[in-house]
Amino acid sequence: MQRWRGYDAAPGGWGRSVVTIGVFDGVHKGHQATIGHAVTRARELGVRSVVVTFDPHPAEVVRPGSHPAVLTEPARKAELIEALGVDALCVVPFTPEFSRLPAEAFVHDILVEHLHATLVVVGDNFRFGHRAAGDVALLERLGRAFGFAVEGAPLVAEAGTVFSSTYIRACVAAGDVAAAAAALGRPHRVEGVVVRGDQRGRELGYPTANLLTHRYTAVPADGVYAARLIRRGHPEPLAAAVSVGTNPTFSGRERRVEAYALDFSGDLYGERLALDFVAHLREQRKYDAIEPLLAQIAEDVERTRRVLG
Image 1 (cartoon, helix red, strand yellow):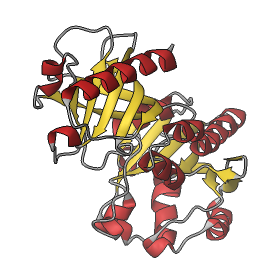
Image 2 (cartoon, one colour; image 1 turned 30 degrees about the vertical axis):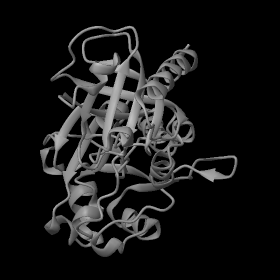
Image 3 (tube, helix red, strand yellow; image 1 turned 180 degrees about the vertical axis):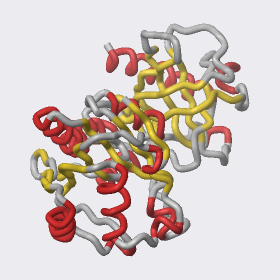
């Protein structure tokens, strides 16, 4: 898959293409259906497929301070999109200037001038241009003028629930990682670099990897979880019991993500790890003594082992 930073980075000889546009945070089942439809249509038409997305999230530029929790970091999002068979990923820097681009100019500059769209695939709720003035109906009218077709991709739902990034963020924020996984089609992932903490886990016999995550990462609600820990360069994940929260037993104030890797001995400091959250085990609790805390940790570890098989 080719990767471009900015639509003007598209090669000069780039031919006709099928284009789909969106933030695609999470690359959830709905996104997969839209992107997959674009890939299929491109192959049928004998042209290449292009996914156009944005960085940073448009909400942060349009309404500073409103950046939503991020379900997939840029590198992970690119990996997931590539796995769907896309030919090119175009990441458009979403700047204040770009946010003021009129809908008609958006279509002409990106879809016509640089990507030579023969077909554009978008969700039914797609909006574009300054103040989100453009909708699917306008895109269809402009398509007739510029010579490209438009196909809408219906929203994906199961059991009456429409899958969206907003819905998945709400699931993660509530600690319902099972519902998030059902909508994503895979476990929700949190990534970060292992940094030194208080060393308290090591003192208790359960050394943990303290993850420093990106400020906007969608971290699950406080509690204890069963997760799979992924290390770069290591094909097999490790089972991990993960604590999210402030460690109230020791009057902690800083919210942390700490993972205890089962059956592992070694140094993870400085490594960039990923945690795939599989199941919520319990809420966070405060204990009055070390003994009941140790007993609970032992139970958490055994439950993690059972959940992850």
